Image (cartoon, rainbow, N blue to C red):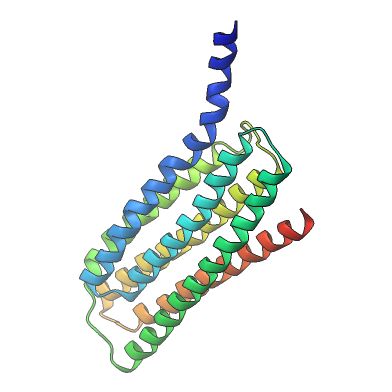
Length: 220
C-alpha cells in the first residue's frame, strides 16, 4: 500500500520539471545559436533577439524553481526564501538587461551613421527558426495552463514566463522583417531601427516582470 502511494506521488513532484525543462533547454540552445548567427550575419536585430531569448531564460528559470518548490510540502520559510531569491535574481536580471539595451542602442546609433553590410538571407532563415522555437515553447506552456495548479506564486511565474516568450516572438518577427527588407531592397538602416524596437521589448518585459515580483513580494 505504501509503495502504491509513493508511486502516485511521484508524477505530482516531477510534473513541474516536465513543463519547464524542454522549453528552458530549447530556448537556451537556440539563444546561443542565434547569438553566433547574429555575429556571423552581422545583424544587430538578430543579436538583439538572441539577448531577448536570454532574458526569457531568466523568466523560465524562475517559473521552474517556483514550480519545483511549490511541489514540495509548503512552509512559510520556503515561501519567504523563494520571494527573496526572486527579488535578488530580478535585480541582477534588470541590471544585465539595462546593460544589454544600452549596448544595443549605442551600436544602433553607430550603424545609423555608418551602415554595415548584413547577410539578409541567412538572417531570415535563423530568425524564422527562432519564430518556430518560440511558437513551440508557447504551445508547451499554454498546453499546461489548466493542469495541476501549484498555487498562485507558480501561476504568476508561469504567466511571466509566457509573456516573456510572447515578447520574444515579436522580436523574432522583427528580425525576420529586417532580414527580408535587407535581402530584397538592400536598405541596411532597417537593422538598427528594428534592433531598437527589440531592445524596447526587452526593457518592457524586464521592468514588468520586476514590478510583478516586487508587488508579489510586498503582498506576500
